[in-house]
Image (tube, one colour):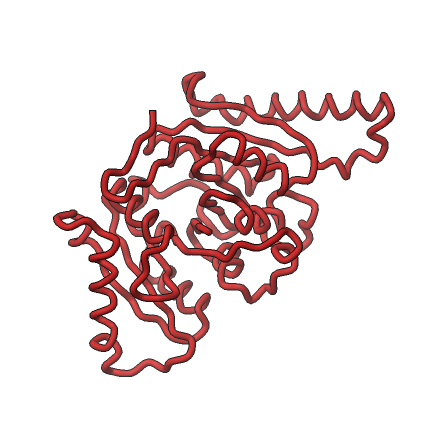
Length: 295
């Protein structure tokens, strides 16, 4: 049954956890299962076998080897799920083969996934692994929000779940899907929500707070229902200078449990070659908390 947030209309019925069985992926599982439990979602656990590892797929021996890889992946996923003690109707195992990012997007579409959860090592030296540059390709291409657990993120969610969510917005006012998800999560977890807008083209000044108070008031009216308790737990921050540095400085000093932000849609070639200075990439690989990206 869909659990629909009455204030934002956000539903997370199906959660996908994609794994390559690396430590980075295992760290992401705890976040995927926590969100699935909070929203009473079905958890899909998927592994995609990279066919580049099989040079002679036409041969009988290659087909046997590929089938063994499928069977081994099924066994490993079952081992990952055993400690969660999920009812059989609350999870699905998906093992497929092909081009990893493309197959994952197909799995997301075919199973009506509402949220995908990935772990990542960062881009360097992991071009052929799911949890490297492939993770970035997925959050750029996926039709659903993607929660990426980066290499500096704690291996398990904080006790009590999300207590402080940071929503990074490019413009204020803002009625983006990212704002809707940030509000939904803050409502669901009774968390504090901070909205941050970074101006890279403007120096800080004493009257900055006054100048931007009105746009942020519009943000509340646009995104948070009147009478909602969240209106008492929301605050705004203005940052200056490079956006990744400003956001990460706030995360480090404010015990943020999740960053929520919008990302641009890109085709696979552009996603694979995006400059390392990109804000989303910088946050995913450097943040001390997971990053939820929404196209």
